[in-house]
Picture 1: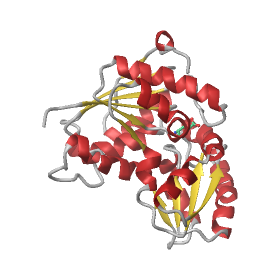
Picture 2: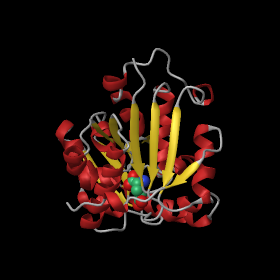
Picture 3: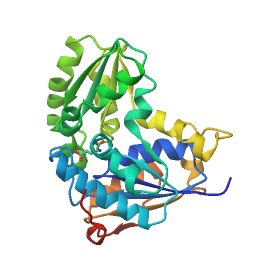
Picture 4: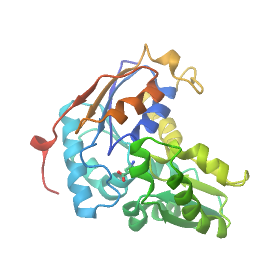
Amino acid sequence: MSRLKLGLFDSGVGGLTVLHQVLKRHPNHSYIYLGDTARVPYGERNPREIRSIAGEAISWLRNQQVDALIMACNTTNALAYDIALKISGVPVYGLIDSAARCIRAKRVGVLSTAATAASRAYTLQIHRYSSQTQVIEQACPAFVPLIEIGNFQDPRLRIAANLYLAPLLAANVEIIMLGCTHYPLLEPLLRQLLPSHIQLLDPARALSKRLDQLLGIPKRTVHNSINSSKDLAVCRFCVTAASETFAKAAINFIDYEPLVEVVSLRSESCSH
Ligand code: DGL
C-alpha cells in the first residue's frame, strides 16, 4: 500500500490524542495536523461560528492535498460533519459515528464540550445503532481551557471533574465516552474518581480501526508506544497562533520535539 497523506484538525492539543491512536495503528503514512490555537476553545462558541471555523480548517487541509480527512474534534464533528463531506473532496472519518457503532450498553454517559452536548449528536448517533440505550450528555466547559494550559495538577480540574461525573454516576452509567478529544489527557484523573466497573471509552480507538478500510489492516499493531513508528510516520504540525504548550504536548505523543509551523487560514475562508 502506498503512503497516503491524512489531514487532522482540532482547536488545539486535543486532536493529538487522535493522532496518537491513529499512528499506533497506521504508522506508515503521512499526517498533517492543524491546531486552531488562535480560536481555542471551540466548545463555547455558537453553532454558526463553529460551522464557519470548521469550513476554514477543512478548506485549508483540502488545499494541502490530503487523501482523507479525520475530524479530530468532536465539536466540529457534531456541528459541521456535513460541511466536511461537502467540501473536503476526500473520505471523511468522524469520531462520533465511529464510537456510536461500538455501543451495546444500557446506559452511557458522554463528557463533551457545551456545543457538542447541546447538539445531542452522541445521543442521535448512538440511537441509530442501539435505540434502547439511555445516553446522558454532560457538558464540561471548564476542562479545555485548563487542559490547554497543560498543568494537570491544577486542583480546579479535580473539582470540575467531580462536578461533571456526579450526574453520570447518579444515572449508574456503564460506559463513559470521552466525547472531546482533549479529555483522554484527563484519563488518569477520571480513572481515580470512577469505580473500576465503569469503562472509559476513547472514540479515537474505534476511528483508528475504521481507517483499516482505507489504509489496510495493520500487519502488526504497535502497542502503547509509538517510538518504533517515529521513523516511519511523517507528521507535519501547524497551528494558527504560536503556542509553547502545543509543542510540549506533542512531545508526549510523538516522542520528539516537532517543528510547529504557524499558518493562516484566512485566505481559505468561505461561508456555509
Ligand atoms: N477537542 C475538541 C473537541 O473534541 C474541541 C474542544 C474545544 O476547543 O472546546 O470537541
